[in-house]
Image (cartoon, rainbow, N blue to C red; front, top):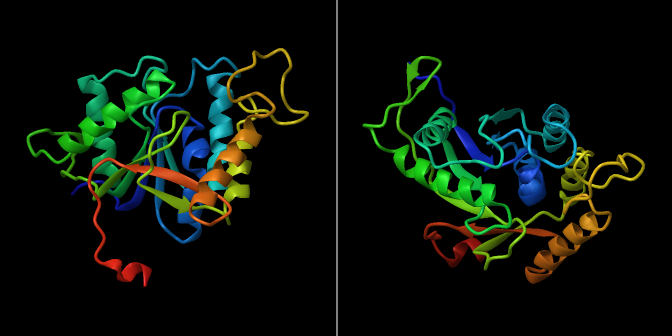
Length: 245
């Protein structure tokens, strides 16, 4: 008997905090509506300029609770050196077969951080191979069944792309920002930051303002207060215009 579970949405991210920063509002919307969500971080973020891997692990636990997610795993890959290796591919295949998601959200194809691009390629490869019967993977010594998600979408990080669609997160933006601020070693949190730590792209005091401005802009494009954009990696169809009528 296979050890697995059906999951609505699996989020795969290169580093702890990628999910919160990029699709935190969507995650809260999903969990608030009773959907099952699993987050998988590929690395511990051990090469981050600020904090430690141990501190980030505790921050991740805190952020995950805020998001309302009950299951979050770490694949233990090497931060700054995520390779398209057989070991890493099989690790993601096993992840997909274990949680059997309907949808996967993951890093975009073109990004400022090489790890983000590498995770995109890794997930694309694993999604395809996860459906191949001759590639065997095991979880807790049990042979896993094949599985492919119905849809795979990339969330937006630093570099912009032409979105395929936007998700309205107006009711959940405050919870998203609370989850991001749980990573107080990484982002600017008034009266909590160590002034001796180096300044990074996301630790600048105005970073959270930029994040909100961007969400407002995407929201304005679809007539709501805040939104998060997504890229469809494969063609997506709708049953009819009736979904909007």
